[in-house]
Image (cartoon, rainbow, N blue to C red; front, side, top):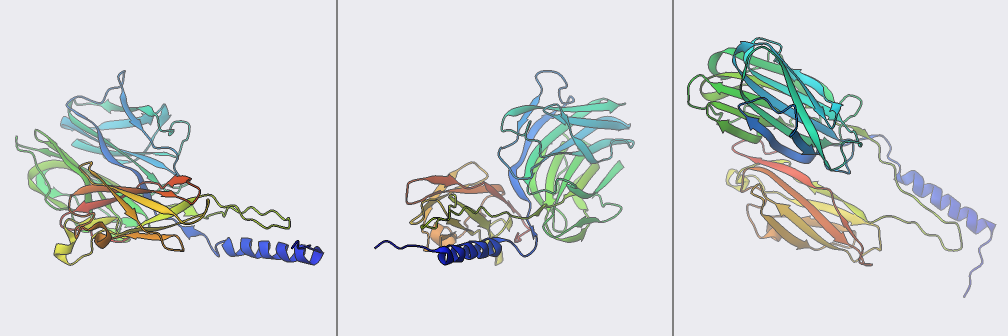
Length: 395
């Protein structure tokens, strides 16, 4: 039977489409949490300054990404208390120095640089990373680290920063002279540089307060360094206790999350058949972005990964979740999807009471969804940190 539509019917369809557009618009802007697009890694360590001529240091920023921020942390130890400034560039683009103490007379220095989302050089290919030092004093040892975040406010990516250094040997590292502020959803990053006043390297057993290690210690002779983060909202300080006396420097900054207003994708064709086209995609949610090592032993839950898929050719959907531990071992989990597109992978489904928390440092996960037409989509990679004995928290 063929149904004829008159003007009244078309007007009703128009009103329906208008209502759907209005309903999909958020009532107010939604604050997006900062994500880790690429986890912290050690780019360079050595007794000489990083190379300023070929072969340069190289680093690649994943592409695509949403409101990305490249962060580079540098430590330098000189042969005495000297003033030493530093500059950094990535793919010929000058990076912004957020915080440092090199312009003060200190033998241990730390520097935090950043570069806003720059698609021309953040294209997935290796680019030259050049660190230049100027000032008096010769190099004793240097570390260079890098990471990439996404969902960062591009107009004001850094909300505040702090530094503290010691020119005399002490086992007390820090504290800052004033508190560091972390707004809800923001992410603080800290670099610590230790130089022992003996031949024995110094370490820090546990970070202070709500700080947690994401990398380190990296140790060479009497030189050691750490990268730590803090995601707990409020004002905070940073004071650590080393295993012995040492010269120290630490620099920290708070990365500010973006104000992200999602724009829905909506396509309608006003013919006797009304259709809405939605691409295949989904979300991924981590119950925790920082967990205790072996969390159930302390009365906490292990990791849970969940999300929702939609669009494309529609259900039934099949999902395979990939989980990579800090040692690089990858486990694959086919998970069921309910009628609304929701899926969940917890310790019960994984068959592991210590799912996602039995090895220290950075874990990652992503999934592939396939729709009823055989088309597939890969989710973004998400990361979480596992540390002992602190920092079990939710996003």
